[in-house]
Image 1 (tube, rainbow, N blue to C red):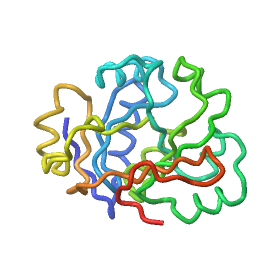
Image 2: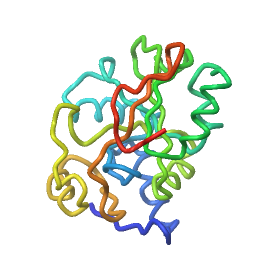
Image 3: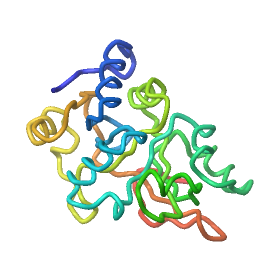
Image 4: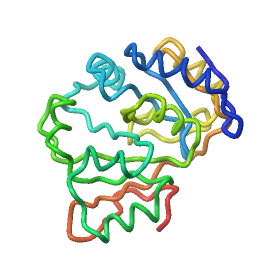
Length: 203
């Protein structure tokens, strides 16, 4: 199902409709401030397992990130961070970044593994932030493609995405053309932040 939502004139009823599907364990595709992404409700184990299966992996081997509405929500899922890291997050988010941070002890339970870190995203896109706000907890998020795949034009066009993924997910949100560049991934587990993939985000 393809649903059009305008970023600068969001229809709350459509957001509620998508969130209802998320709470029922469905997988959706949605716009971000970079490429389109695929995700599900963090609190729905069945949905997490289905998302992993869609990516041809087991949930306990997955490295999915979570998409939060703001930094206060981030603090529920990561251990206390130092002042300089917090300053960096505040400077860059919302924005096209994924920050790898030390996860709280609750995160491995959600994914059925022993993960000690988690990728955190807060995109600068009002559609997906409205979804997370309405959902009441983060989305689990992953790219439509594998890391080694080339980013091609059809990953920015919602109608092309619909043609390719309609039989695999419940809802595809058309939020306009996406961007043909992924987020910048920053590892914050060491003594200083390290860029492990340069993408759209620039410090």
